[in-house]
Amino acid sequence: IMFFTNTGRVYRLKAYEIPEAGRTARGTAIINLLQLMPEEKITAIIPLREYEEGKYLFMATEKGLVKKTPIQDYANVRKTGLAAIALREDDRLIEVKVTDNTEDILLVTRDGMCIRFNETDVRSTGRVSMGVRGMNLTDNDVVIGMQTASQGTDLLIVSEKGMGKRTNMDEFTVQKRGGKGVKCYKIVEKTGDVVGAKAVNDDNEIMMITTEGIIIQLRVQDISTLSRITSGVKLINLDNGVKVAQIAK
Image (tube, rainbow, N blue to C red; front, top):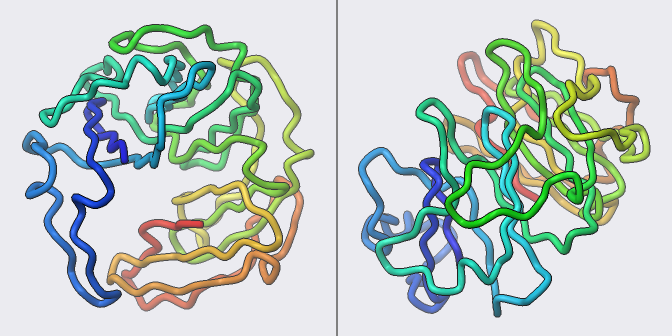
């Protein structure tokens, strides 16, 4: 398993090196398994069996930069970690995907914007390069998720106040990287900012976890499919001051 952190470093562990525990157990502190730096947090996890030729790691940062590097460049990661991407001071790595140079990439922002472009727009660069602009962000907006179009037929978007919806992938036309993108979620007072975006199919389920540590599991087919510029429906009832922290497929 490869672990990517917000500071742009990558670590790896054999899956069997992670202690197994029951559902309600707290688990082992990651710091006991990986030699993380202070302030370093894991933002992406990729399970791998081998480092195949022709496969790439595609990365996205909070500030809208993207980078593509052959997966073989990461074949000898040490226990102490390796630099996976060069980041500017105020930027952080948010997501990593394995691609094969044919994927359409979708970036989704906190303010409800989305861009779709083909990964061939991003030329392959070495391990410690910085990447190129994937999306042109407005002031204070940040990228909160990256998905590939082949991961699902719909894009599911969830906001911090527990609202969400699906929008068909076909509503996001392919454009050149570096543009502003299109609106994919209508943010109003009762929605709050976008916290998660996942490419989904009808037979998927999603889990949402709140800032209080409560988890709810939903079937994707029970979530309304709506057009791009909508806010969606209530997916979870939240107490005052509680927000959706993250979603997982």
